[in-house]
Image 1 (spheres, rainbow, N blue to C red):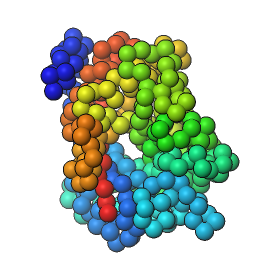
Image 2 (image 1 turned 90 degrees about the vertical axis):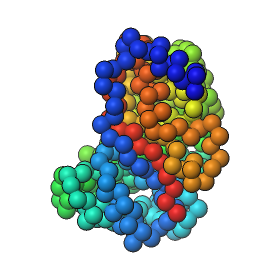
Image 3 (image 1 turned 135 degrees about the vertical axis):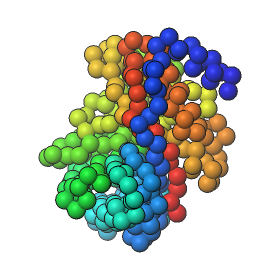
Image 4 (image 1 turned 90 degrees about the horizontal axis):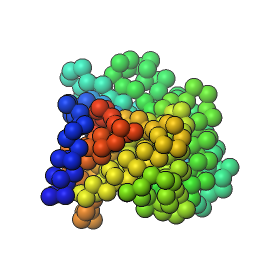
Length: 308
């Protein structure tokens, strides 16, 4: 905690005057495939306004079509997952009592992607984008101004080679009129003190993380800022700085993700259970240490939980 206090203090000269996020939300790893339970979860979430994501597990084949694993629950096709998101939106709309608006990310990940052919990953991303667009159009028509639907993506260097992640995003990006994607990436093994395209885990580099998080038009970066030490925030500031210095295109962060809720549910987070306000303060402070990466505010902080 002392190191964190020193970090915040060192950024005081350029720290924004109003560093509060516009929204605090809860996101979920969805391991329960019940449509009725998704409606209940939407109702429970009706107190929230802002961006959040529903993650349905790793890409997988479901009886010859594309789907996701639901974190060890029953595999669901992408079409079935789209119906689950609709039920979440219905529950949210039915139970909200004020002017709340939810921006829902329908999410998958790159877990296990190394076991899939490149073409399969691209096709999975393409189909995912088509269902996201269809659910988004349905929400715009059925609940205008109440719910907006986006894609969501958890791409982590430790989980797959860059090429697999890039193929999925190429497929998603190729769908006509695709919806934006909440990109909840990690920066595993990336440098914390330099921005010269240093190496990250599993053959990734700062350039490759920057590209996966930011190069594609649909991308809305909301990285994982989990560590108490502030190292995740430092890694992302350096990736942002790399982009500004060498690509002429620094990242605009739309928010960030913490995992305090999931840690409280299942444990195993001795050093990575940041509270939402801690992750927010860490990332914003780091970004404002350099003129190349300054950002006045972050739209949403979302804290992820398990929905069993």
